[in-house]
Length: 439
Image: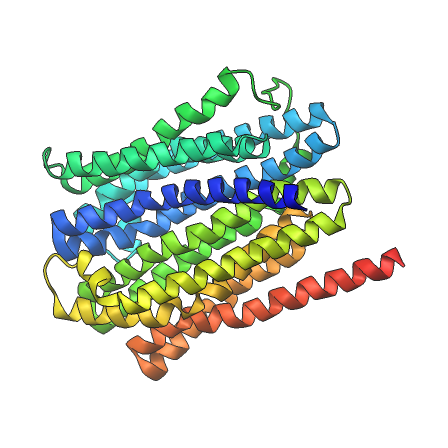
């Protein structure tokens, strides 16, 4: 058991560092955009984030779905199908890259209007979306390769790839926005270069001959491609849930307080990216180990890994909420260059109410990953859809109608708490069914 705990710590810690690095792409943009372009720049950035969620969600769906099946085939010694899964994932990443690049070339303006950009924010939103979509191949292939490298027994390489990209993004954000004076174009250019740098580190795993996966010229298989969608779907829905939340919350806050309200929510949304990235890091870190345990029919290790991951999620959630509650005012002020009293008051209230959901969201993300990693994707699909659309959107509109701004902040916990109850119920049901079959 000590060996398992040590292995979990290694995988989870490295994955968390990597995921926090990824989330810092947008957080760094938020800080530097707030300092360089004020409230309107912050509002424009928040309007564009849903498209980043879509690209990242597609990348995670392809990468996690493919890498999970790769891990199972690798554990079973089926090297041919393991490489075929990788090959098909590369083809899918290329297909989605073309779609997103075309959207960037021809649809950035229409997307900006659709997302709610007005005369003050349209130009900045449009340029951010255009460049972001043109860099989509870098995001897609970087994430896919990271997932396969992690499942190939090299979590340290995956971590270095993401952290190096994040550090480069922070440095380039400063250089492009301030000394170069490139404004919003500089912010998104820095974000786009980050996965390009990460790709070099991930590719080193292949160039050094450490990889167990290989690209096959005749690897196209529609039956194998379905695993990318079935096993990776919860990761996509989670990102789409974040995008849907941002869209709905932006709409509601525009009605409540205009662009300042959107900017205040932007502070919360970007801090949420970092908090949720830790939960995603724990979940993605434990995924290869859970997949291996399931392939070996090792129920004891599977259960121990799940409990260790859950304990880490709950401990971090408690610490994060305590810090954000106590230091809500100074955290909000970091992103408030214009010293807007309204933005400050809204952000402080938001930090204290929105993150009540943290422990429940952490467990929900973990259980969705657990069900996908153990090749029982249906509960993960249901839970993801509940979190993303079936509960969150109605809760936001209902609670906003009842309590205004306070109701919008409470929509997130009002969604995550019942979904957490459903997650625990689904796990208990599947365990009872497994015990009955064993008997």
